[in-house]
Length: 69
Length: 69
DNA sequence: CATATATTACCGTTTTAACGGTAAAATTAC
DNA sequence: GTAATTTTACCGTTAAAACGGTAATATATG
Image 1 (cartoon, rainbow over the protein chains, first blue to last red):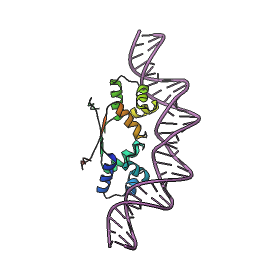
Image 2: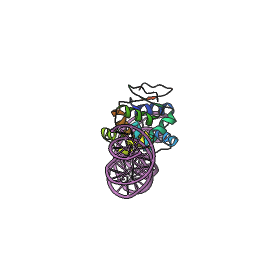
Image 3: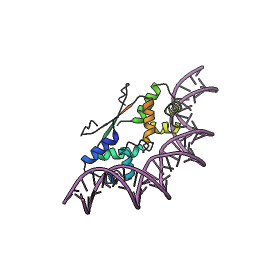
Image 4: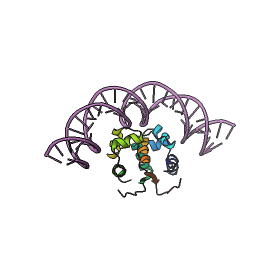
């Protein structure tokens, strides 16, 4: 799953946003954006989703059973 | 990102596990497994990761910028 | 270099997810 | 069909994430 925190950071930079701006766009707190970029895994899934949506990042789940659910 | 809840449910069934057994294997509460399968997005990211690890499901993040981070 | 901006870090309060217990509904097994 | 198991649902308590404020460090800009 690589480094989500770094990916978020890179995309945010590319979009020319500060952590605070991204937080506001995602409707979450600045501290949470910071935590996500630091790969803190105890954050709420919904908060990660909000950030990914703003940055236009998609999520995919895969397995050997390769379910096309 | 498709239906994570359904994917977890299918994989769990395939593994012959009950929600309670999966919860124990993942080291989380049964209620949380239930919530994940119901696509409740307010669950902790770390709890989702624990479940995915048990079921051998991988996560991928993608974007138009296709960062190979 | 100095200044401005952004990031990192810590803290206290508030909000809320996690959890197990329990019971009802649904599913499966006999 | 009935019985056993599993899933769904609700609840109260406990633990912890979310949050904004603030300050210190780091980075960028002049």
